[in-house]
Length: 320
Image (tube, rainbow, N blue to C red; front, side, top):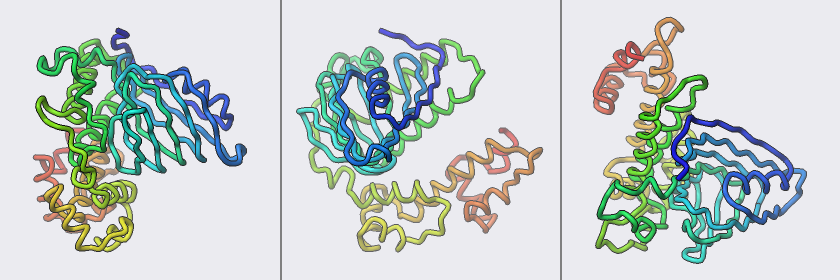
């Protein structure tokens, strides 16, 4: 067991496939890497926050790159931020698109992956962290893994957890005690257990269209990538290649909300982040930040904000 340690943040970028191969071997496992296309246009980027038993990565790979990798020996959870990804680990053969959140290769299996201009958020968790979380599942986490993309709501909770932990350790020069580090590791493992494994006695559902319909996944990915654009429901439906009615029915059935209400919550999250980062001394005001994110009716904005976060926007600004 590695154990947790102070965050080690690294950033790496190269246009040389051989250097990319070496980085993947060091960060993950030994591999064979082959790039399709003009190598002169190739670029590989890898950023990591390493906590020991947990690593939080973002990887970007241009062009189409095929990689054969040895078994990872740890649980790896991925979120596709851009491009497409193929994974074949002998258990499942999957093609993933932006918005998909899912378990990567089986920890004990070697695998092949194809990266098609893919940008990925990758979270690795040591298997030892799953001991003691739930005695009913101890020792059987791997056999309970669900390999299809999770529901939109579970994907949202996982994204928020990863962003919270990443933000916690992103500030340089701040020391973190073993209590904070240990708690972060246990939090990641607990949320992963809830998100990516089936409860005892439950069969793994295989109907991907029901668990995470493509229209919902594409809609969420499009809105999260473009919250600053002047979007209507027709724009979102067009990006998802479905009718407005089909998109609205999918969001209502699977998330119990509407596409525009979901977009409003994304923008409220952006407002909250800016209010937390700003302050009266730097000219930040609730009105200005709200207007930047399309909230021009002050009373309606305040009501939505309080409903979402349980406090007023001015309180968030004061308590930064």
